[in-house]
Length: 314
Image 1 (tube, rainbow, N blue to C red):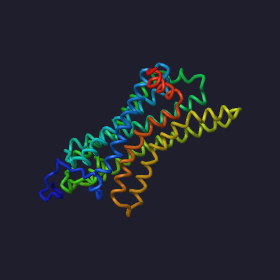
Image 2: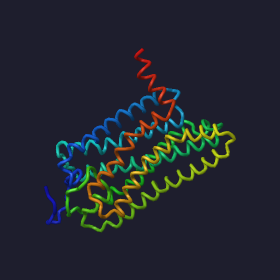
Image 3: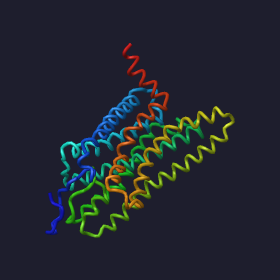
Image 4: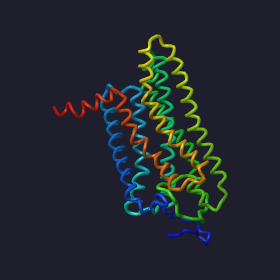
């Protein structure tokens, strides 16, 4: 294993360490990773199956939820098996191309999930503020176009980073203290000037995730204004209750990411393994908990799950 390249030749093989400083605890750390991954696989697969096979769930809200579950499946599958291989078999070797591919997929999915949460906020706004036109506005054709647009936005914003990384000469350390590949986490091992990478990465975050957060905030301000103008308390409670699952998903998705960013920016004295663990929470928690949240809070899904598992046994 190389730790520093004195020949000036660019590394094509890297080594993911997992969680630095906690190598002797990797076996124990793998247990919650494995449980989270299995839960995410089963929960999201069940959610997708129920939504696609039950015509009563072919409504806009559930179709967007199906997109979110699919994105969660891909996000967890692109990161957690790699981490488990490191924890169990110390199989941290990864080629440069595979590292870039992993980064590309995970970042695309992350951007896509942010976009899905935004359109789900738009969905809740229409359902509450203009319920009579809800199904005529959000037709299946429009939902399909929205899904394609979300994917293309993610693809087009992340794709240039591939070339920004491929142009670099990785002649520094080829040992990455992480469980998966990240853009700047990989670029910082280059001998070249990476300011373009840093500024473009910042542009991508601001033009997608930050913009999505602002638009979600505006959507919920409009929703709250409409709710507080409703005549009865029951109507207000029912309207707010329909947003509960979505708000929980928003907090679960953006919360760990914001906290991780703040600790990386201001927590200079926080141990490295804490930063890595927080980064893994961002890819572990949403895929695992989203199906549970929607399964508990959404009556239609609860009923379909009960029908699938319990009524079939009778």
